[in-house]
Image (cartoon, rainbow, N blue to C red; front, side, top):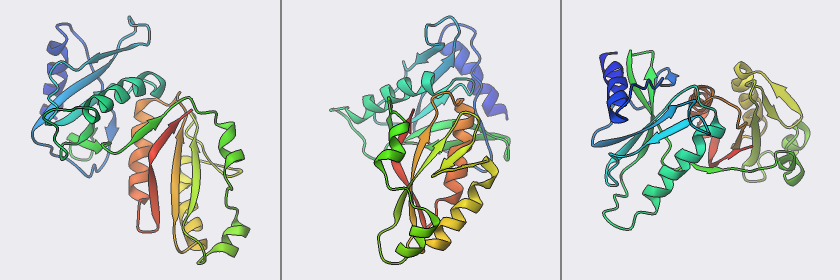
Length: 233
């Protein structure tokens, strides 16, 4: 826990102002230690037009980046800054390190210290009209999945996550805690597996986003793959 408080102090001095950054909380992070790092901070700041303030002064291209995002921000506020940082590293022409990764810093409550969520390979897609998702894709129903099971490649299934943390899969609206059972049902029907596309409401808080991402990581198995593109609507 001391390390978390130290991180907050660094945030304060890095902007030459007294600022508090509240890290999103997570449990049982897969990554709990990252070496050779540079930090970036996305503060919640009501004095700014978009309520955010990005501090990236000390980023070194060749290092792993720890992106500290205030959990109170919405995806609408945070994602443009995150994309900016991703593009900065991806488009670097000199001193590029292909092994360097990007992580979100979190407060891992299960260990009382920092945990990290890798988002190096994620591509955020914005300005999507969500109504078009189901018009443009053939959403598998239970009936046609049963007919296709074992004969086609794994089906791509869009999951729409709304700001109330309801999941929409096809015509079903599910509570957050029912996602595991739904995934089991879909993989029982199609034993080749399924591929998930994630669509996030731009009004989700960053805390909710991290909670969902950790949940999805838990169910990412040999039968369930998750697309590297994430859509913000």
